[in-house]
Image (cartoon, rainbow, N blue to C red):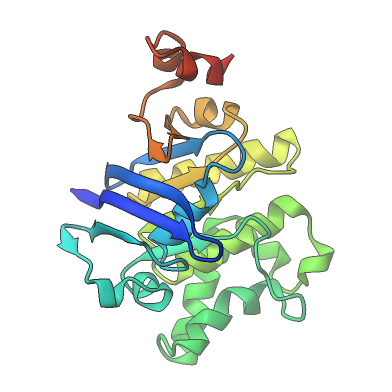
Length: 242
């Protein structure tokens, strides 16, 4: 089943007016993982923010799970309610709250269930991302890799069916990166979660056996595997994987 479809997406920064995306099209099935890469400043993070409703598209269409999203509903709250989870590069954890409460706070804010049900959701998310033993720690007391897993657990606890990850492995050591990617692969396998992530290190896509799209000329290239890109006729793509 198609989980997300984007057609002719355009986005410009308003002040000063600067066109970032023009004619972006993308279609992914449930359980797909797509890595998005490209040169700095091409608008990769902006693309994720537009999907999540954190930035307003200039024009274009988006459908989730076969249902078109109305322009009036293409905002952060509505998209989260429709199953979009966004994980910021800096994780955006609340420093004054424990790991458990960081996961539970959006559930409490949106009144999703009783307190007992919220605790159950938080506990499941802790288990899923293997961070239960850090439940009572504060963000300043845990590593970057664990903070990233907590941020993903928080999105998943809100029943995110599509995860948007902005450079999830940035700054991580090799072991932390491998552990995180293994957990993301579990999300895909167990829950058919669709994952779109911005990456700078193409090794991430190789480790996940994921297709890669490059943001070039304000559009996304066709999703391809690493080896396919190496043999592509377009030298601009080939140079990306050297």
